[in-house]
Image (cartoon, rainbow, N blue to C red; front, side, top):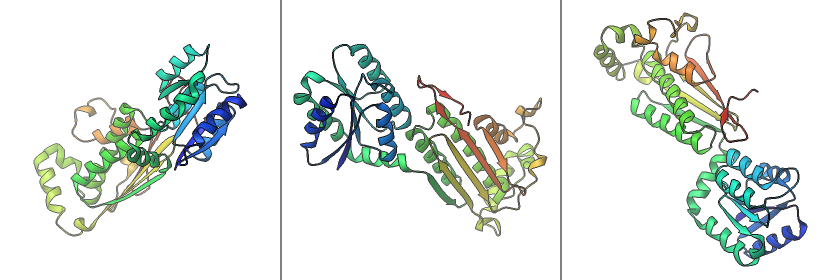
Length: 304
């Protein structure tokens, strides 16, 4: 059953829209009297679609569209427009509203418009809607670079579909995670030194491939936990190697360091996330990246 939220400060229009939609036995309709009440309803239970008036006190329809676009991008919003709201309606459509229905033709157009939007990729919509409720992802990986690449791609796609980050920031986070996982693979579980990479890159990879089939290295795993919220993503990566002294990490921003083959991972992890921390023995790294959106839809660093 599809859940539809109707938002309108006019009791007459609210009742009209609700009664039209309630005629479909497969739709559950709930209501709110302004945008703020609507957001509160969404936070209690995410609807499949929102129908909203434009001119309302507390929070108008345009503001509601912006919040939904930023916080719940998988939920389509249909506008109910009236005379004098044309400019706001155009702005709302540009901000991400799915469609609109003039109030003077609600009886003829509202149900069909909502049905068309709900019927578009129904299965995919439900699957993607589940991402709004995803708060944690846990993986235990063997020492396999293909698995690492697949996981990095999965994390990137998930945070982008959840709209925690835009495409560019999702890519930057994925790059940081890739470096952290690669470090766990080569330096943590397989204990291959960065110095060997400086001297002979081929020998570096040959030793890693050999140790993947030898004890004790082949039995070691990489543990990954991803914690998701609207404000941030926290990724914890643990290898089963002996660890290292994190205090001994060189500063990758020092002159000439960018030219070295090693140290790139540390630099990218620090540049592409807000916080990088190790445990005392160095076999756990925690990456934290925060995200929030300004009123015009641009991404800014969260102050909290």
